[in-house]
Length: 186
Image 1 (spheres, rainbow, N blue to C red):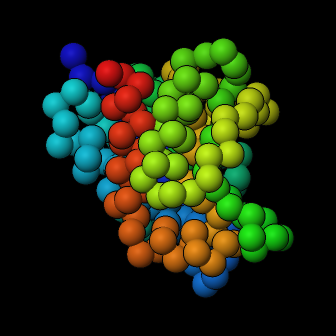
Image 2 (cartoon, rainbow, N blue to C red):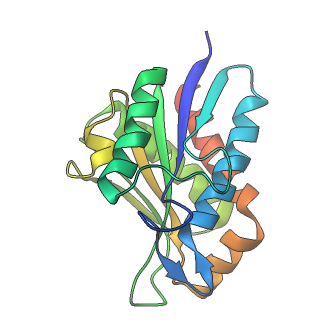
């Protein structure tokens, strides 16, 4: 029986719920592309089934921030996903801030362990510093999902080097996340 992975490409193409901006790039464009690449890797592996929150670049979920988040969670819950991976880019006032980090609802938990594996492989793939797993029970997509959920910050859109790599090679980030999923389920 295939493991069902719900890939949530953080944010909508425009408001409501548009993401961060930095270095001429939009978070929602990067997360869309990385999610598509990740879905291709998962689809090529008979051990997985995948569903995307944004199957097309124009896909918009909800009419406000809260309904956008609820639509993603409701879709994953009704599909019966085994894991929920929400892809985001980080942002900071400090252009030197960098690295990958991720969040889960609690620790210890399946999601926390899955996130650790994803971060390790994402850091290996990109060379970005691993800032570690953090617990954020207040995040809607972590609190309301019926399955283990990890929100992954794949790098800082406000860091010129990290933003350039995210823009030029979204497949690299997808591979890092995919390798982390494989590592966990191995």
